[in-house]
View 1 (spheres, helix red, strand yellow):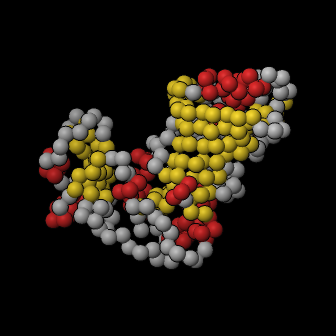
View 2 (tube, one colour):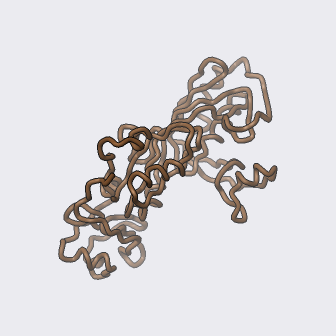
View 3 (cartoon, helix red, strand yellow):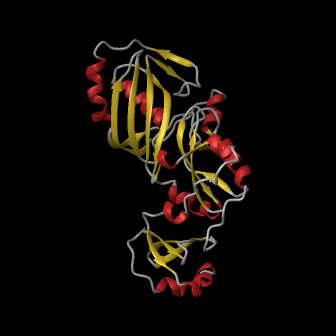
Length: 298
């Protein structure tokens, strides 16, 4: 079984737990794209079977979230799972500040990752160091906030909608929103509504996965990579491609530097992922998807 299963993750379980549940259901190699924290919900794409070979490429996509910032308090984790380490009154001109948030936080800029993150220092995730009371300097990274909308809610809360690049920490963005508003804050709620080409309209609930109903709606790898150029491969030479035949690549049209493309078989199965560079097209990964995707076995 090969392709992408889009899960609507509920608050509570970790992304790794969702992977284990799906792996038990389908009995195939499974890996997720873009971890969602346990308290968060929404789009969690899972690569299945041979599609795990192109997971890194899919993980580069931008993302879209809606969420709520609790103003007036800051937690050590930047989310509702942590302890409050600072409190500050809300300013009287909060509405005026709302009009400045998108202006100051949109576009390309640097953002410093939080201590409570999976980034490793000396092989140890930062969140493990943070739990031990050890805090280290983190290098700021370039991120892009393509779109940001904020609205005031009752009880000192702000709702937001953001489209952002890979590597953007929304917990940090929540703190930045609070800072622009003249106070402190933390990310109270978060829901991912889109991950690259995948959105909630394609997602299945955890209850559906755990049930014994209809087969799960697995998206073909070709569909998940529909934004890439695809070159058809005649059936007689599919096996040669899987063996890394270079003469096949020499006959392809030229590409752009750094461009990725696909070789696809007669059944739209992905045979190989390519990249164009100084030596022309080169193989990145070779996939062994069958020409006809099998019916799910339960």
